[in-house]
Length: 337
Ligand code: PEP
Ligand code: MN
Image (cartoon, rainbow, N blue to C red; front, top):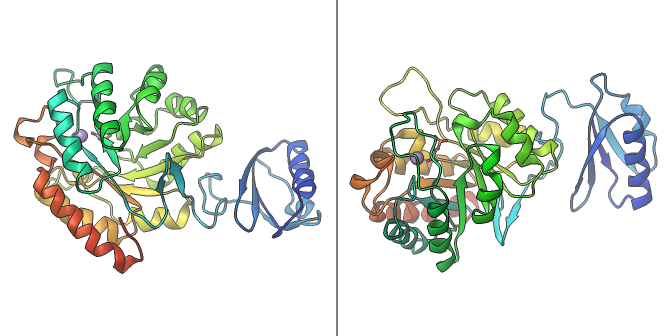
């Protein structure tokens, strides 16, 4: 149930509506927009008659939300959401680029990677310290030591950090080093993890599951939002299809579809989306053209020596080329970097 208050509705009017919703068994999530306050009620399956609210003072309209996700739905914030993470806006007019190696491997490696991406205008340094590898024998990440190196390299250059959290026991550790918690594709439906993250205020980057539909993905976002953590961004990273020419099939159409269905910012990861560095640039261009609010790109100072995802990691000069191209495309879309 969504109740939209009239422009300039008085606070006591808003409060009376909230009280009524609570009285009927709804949990109320409030979104205070520039013009309208919107109250999202998550509640009894059978809902309530919208008329109950529409006749109340200060109410503009009330409607039932048919989609299974309520708070992730665009109805909740028709104007879209702009996250402000330590001054970096995500979902606004600027396209935010998050870049760095797949994994932190050494101080030298992460420092070089940070320099390469910061010098080209990336705002966020990405790298995993805990890696969800398909094989238990592959490099699993440097753990806390990696997080320390990552944060130091980022701080030196005024970058924020995004890094993956693999289970709920790691949340406090990750949140102490990383400004954004990445929930990886393999964990998109780890509901205990999502619930726990929902109880914190740390921003979340939620990747699309390898075989998740857009509805399932938005329902996963709903887990986080319903806990009260509204700082959620989505990231399309390719899905598994019958095609074998690329590591995954980058679902560019998910970007405009999500934009229509949801108010949440959406990023695109052309590195995991294609698995090949020669395909990263064209898919990055396509994602931005399709309306992505940002990119998540793997960049390594020496990809041939990378301990994970070397084949899809850009060399620094390729990343510079990518940034140049995105900078050129952005103004056509009314955006900038
Ligand atoms: C990553 O970003 O390195 C990663 C493991 O991503 P995904 O969860 O999309 O596979
Ligand atoms: Mn990777």
